[in-house]
Image 1: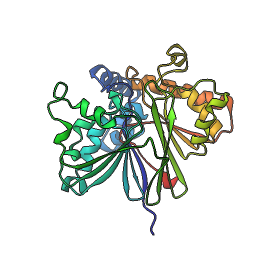
Image 2: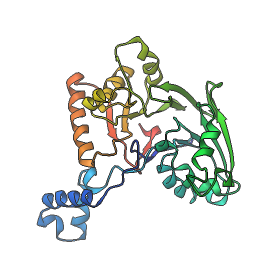
Image 3: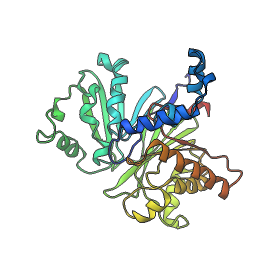
Image 4: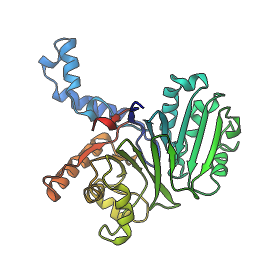
Length: 324
């Protein structure tokens, strides 16, 4: 059997609430770009294109304002992790494929049911196309009731029952894994108010972990060992890093972490690449990049020769897991 793609695409990377850029954010980027430009950069279309291409990512683009949603195309299957507002954008892309003809099949795994992780579900158009097939997985009790409640008429004009697709809600409480052909999905409880679950996807020797909304305490404590084991040797770890290190201390028991803690855990677990995720909604792209640069220095300080690769999760970014 031919090896199928293993692609990871980010559709929502912000935490707690969607946070689109506003005019002041755009203005700040324009000013910064103009300060870097020279007459040679602007003389013709080709030079302008080259100048823009060479700009840092936070100036020529943005990291994104939608809340949590990551899509995997792996082993011939569509896997979706969380249904935040980014799910709406993903749905529009899927409509351009077999889902637009009512012939799509996908699996949606929910980390938990806080609003920023399910608010995109009412706007996910493939749910309203007859013939599409979906399974929604979660470990929380009364999962169907929670999803139905979000679309109660008091809160939304279209009920969940209006969905024309075939939607099966699958509780995970009594299962240990889901196997889809050559794809294996397992899960592990994280540390977050109301309970939250991380997921590990394995396919043809490669492993992806989605671990949002979690707080890590006592890093040397034996209680953290199951989490380190769950992360062990992951090729890509999507990691909640909503706060700075100091904010993480100040906001104890809020259920989120920081880039510094992510580095500590990734190094301990021998993770190959970490994608910092669930960005604080009040942070500008400039703030995110500033914290990220500090994190690079931190990694170098604690382990000069560490092979760990670090990235900031960005809406629209696609990573090919089979190409390293």
